[in-house]
Length: 356
Image (cartoon, helix red, strand yellow):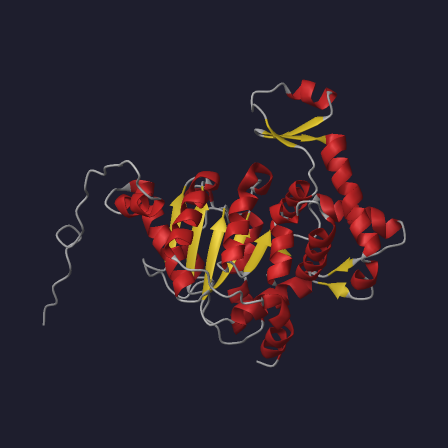
């Protein structure tokens, strides 16, 4: 019996010249992109994938690489947290560090990327492309606040090996109670919503650098990478449907995706990987880096269940442009959903995986 294959041409939708109209909503614009091509169509596909994650009740991870938080993207994260659309975060420690600048009103400026760096250094300014940060008024002031948190909440930090999410949860609650503008901090908003925040690395950021100092001043804090690995795997194992949203690549992308092979390959527990994945990034596949690793390749590692076109979308683009569009779309399309409050459920999730 001969089975007729579907035609890639005749069965495909038409491409339509897209019009932009006055008073058009963000949802209207995204829908129009579905009849275009290249990354515009992928924005449409990614927006609808994110919408399905929210609508179907997926446990949604957000990975944050790069320097987006210092550049103002934290407001988008806060909007999603408040709506109940993000359940767990994995961020670089630097993103958490820079997030706190806004909560405490420390200066962060929009400067020219063409500024003379020798002159900036001489004036006590630092630069992340077009983001200007004062060394004393921002960085050193932030360092003092980090150390103050450790001293003031030391009774809650000492005596055991902490997962990074436990440290960040305690810090988020402290920021919520002490900062003049906690509503501008995704770390504080996440803590109040019971959303755990992991770091992809325990040592390569300014919070860890300050921990090195407080250790020597009589306030040692022990962080456990092994706890991070097991606790994050326990979340994925205990979820009924998992979706990954990855801003950039790098460490946060790998940390989130490795929960699958941690369960199946290392712990020997049956698990097929995450259900859905959405990444925004600019890495080129042929370079062989983790940032550029395709979702299809990740399926071979057991990080995702299948290569289904409707379940995995990678958008080639800079996420400070794309992420606000996706955020606005899902907020327009989806009603708020109850917070899963993963922090309070962590002991049960850990016990479930430990007993598997």
